[in-house]
Structure formats: structure tokens, C-alpha cells
Image 1 (cartoon, rainbow, N blue to C red):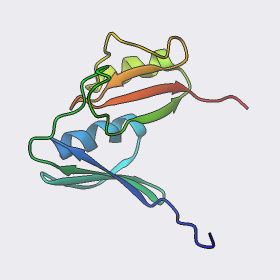
Image 2: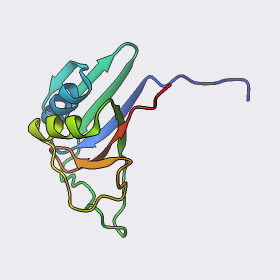
Image 3: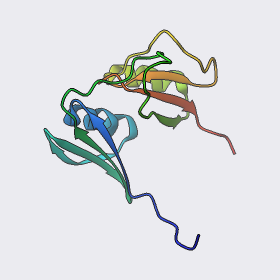
Image 4: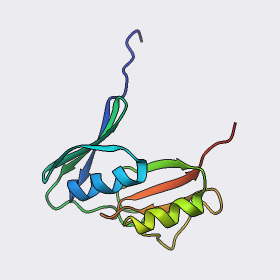
Length: 123
């Protein structure tokens, strides 16, 4: 292959784009660069995450293995326990099922979509 693309943006389905963008703006420290009821976006440097309204959108059940899992984000942090407390204060919830043990923590964002909080690699 001679052509390689650069990732410009990830777009995620959402039941509430404004709240979804607001949550991840706080969690990632990115700027909300667009905010309307049907579409919102956060950006940092040359990368953006968009959140598009999908009527009737429901997140996958966690940890339902039979449900279709659409996506999840893995986020690096310096201290998983501290980040978990801050993210829960920002609107995330911590489900009981935690497959990562001590390696990572699964949280659910305010619309119920899972994401993982992972320790930042050292070195």
C-alpha cells in the first residue's frame, strides 16, 4: 500500500451529544469545539472526537457478552484510583464487573458507554 491515512476524528453515536462531549471534555481536558443538541465535538491539537445524536440510541449492557459492543475508549492516567474518583465525580459510574483486576478499571460514561482507565506506561 502506498497511501496511508492520518486519523483526523472519531465519531461516536450518542443519546445526548452535548452531555457526552461535556463529560469527555472534562475527563480528557480537551476543548468543546462544537455543541448543538444533534452534534457536539471536542478537540485537542489536530484530533477530534464527535458525538452524533442517534434517536433511540442505547449503550451496550455491561458486561453482557451477548450484546453488540460498539466501541470503548482506553484512557491512560498517572493514578487509576485518583482518576476513577474524579471521573465518577464528573458523572461516570463504576460497574461491579471488573475484568481488568489491578491492571485497569472499567467505568461507564454518563450515557452508559463503557470506557477503561489504564495506568500510563512508564518509560
